[in-house]
View 1 (cartoon, rainbow, N blue to C red):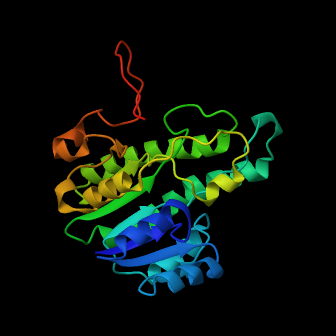
View 2 (cartoon, one colour):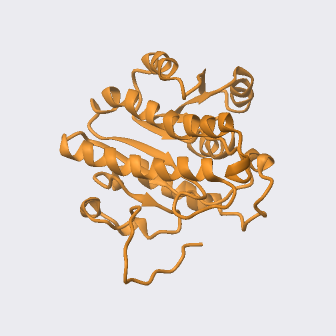
Amino acid sequence: MNIIITGGAGGIGEMLVGHLIKDNDITIISRTQASINKMIEKYPKIKGYVCDISDYMEVNIIFSRLNQFDALINCAGILNPVGSFEQNYMYEWEDTIKVNLIGTVNCCKISIPILKEKKHSKIINISGGGSAFPRVYHSAYATSKAAIVRFTENIAKDFMHDNINIDVNVIAPGAYKTKMWDNETFDKEPEWSDPKLLFDLIDFLLSDKSNGITGKFLHPKDDYKNLDKSISDSDDFTLRRIDNFKFRSVK
């Protein structure tokens, strides 16, 4: 499978490259050539392109060179500003929205003409802490990640309505001690997640076993292997307000 991974030179994106490179052709997108060079030294098989994904024209130029791929995984993201919203610098706040949300939107939009020509193709978006609950002092990050969840649900419905065979899902990946934590100045370190659980979920969503499962908000500890495409028409595994029910947290 030919897979594009944005943010593939660091964090969760780098983790996924290391997992997927064995059996797939991987192209990474990153902000700097230096970060791409380090990844190519580590994994000579990969290809890499420098791109600011928040810039639609830049994304369009890069993707025009990538006319053959089967899946897109959107991992690129930034954290700042961390702190009281009243004290946040708005240029930092806006930059996080541009990279995390608009960057994901740009890559999804430009990939559609290529992916819809495949018999069945996949988009996997990465959400994050604060997407399903408020996260103190992380208003920009949480807002961008929650928006990615609703964006994913919405375009999944669009694809279903238009009979486009692109499955698009979003993952709450869990917490991993990546370089993003270097910018964390408020939250205490959580219990770190098991990467193998994330890799298993990624493998499932990229495989034919998940064909027809779309518009879902999934966590590596969910019982996703027992889902089928009928779930795509339900409110299960989505971002909703539901009253008069009791739920337990997934930790």
